[in-house]
Image 1: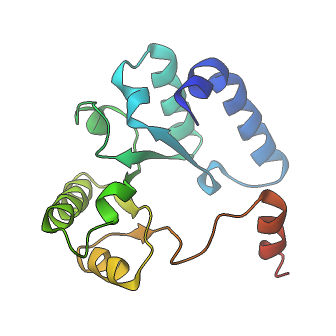
Image 2: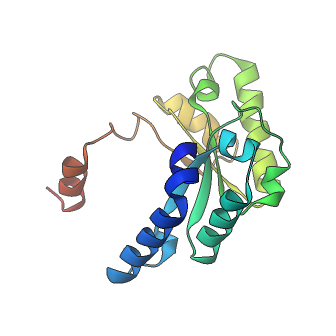
Length: 161
């Protein structure tokens, strides 16, 4: 969810999601909401309430593009965050830039110490995947695994077509 979506339609959209999940027989644990660090920069009571409403419904929360924002690390203990997503700018040159590897490793270690899981974005090569796996990264996404798909193609893929 973009910060604008979260602030303007957050409560209504949250209730709609929860109702839809209930209608189709899925728990909130089947949904992960990605938010940006900037959403937490000047957090309001409405945002805090929605984050905890997600948690209470079993919905997990991921912070997208972690490491590129200007917020404080204190939000990692203030809010119900489940995942940190390492920004692709750190992953892109991880095979050749020791600083990118050091930053990625530090994010992974910090997240694990806080009980969070880590997703690396923009993984395009087996070398990147191997280095991240060796550093303890929990998940990866990127062109190495598949191209983005429009909704109808994704549904077809799920049906085995």
